Image (cartoon, rainbow, N blue to C red; front, top):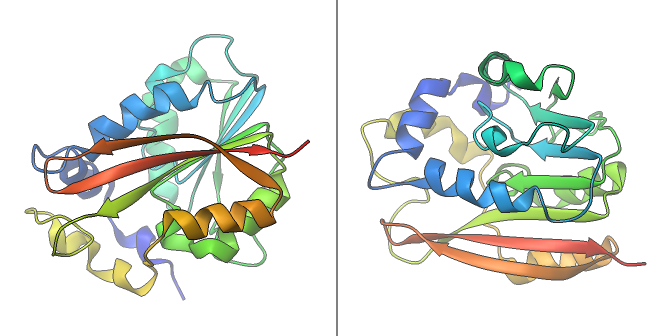
Length: 208
């Protein structure tokens, strides 16, 4: 069955995420700037890269390779087109992380922002074991008030099909999953959003 993310237009996604009442696009970009320094890395793998938000913070010569993974081919095309300065560094890979047949390259650092909610713990752990990074930096959404997990906006119905794959992610459970995979918790940082939600960054470091 087709992944519902393949039916969400990038324009609707980004316009929703950058609304003043949502502010997730802006917040994630700022958070990614620091995530890129989570550990010394030659190869970085970004799970759920969408249109490349945050790639503006990659400095020339900072990484040998930045792998951008997403299930939506049009998202990957947009990311490549938006950052011509990363030619030879950015490699966009189309993959459905929910599929058992998914294969990912090895990386030193994995960044996974607002993607675990759509693939679940098992698929995320599988991706981490496959890539074997020294560090993992992820962001999950915290819903503090009553209401849906997608904020109200004029673009709300673009996300209707995502209910089929969405699952709530708990920080304590995620820590347990990562501990089982051989990682210990490092830096954590919470950022409040204007709609009562919050973004929680959790870093994990591979045990020696």
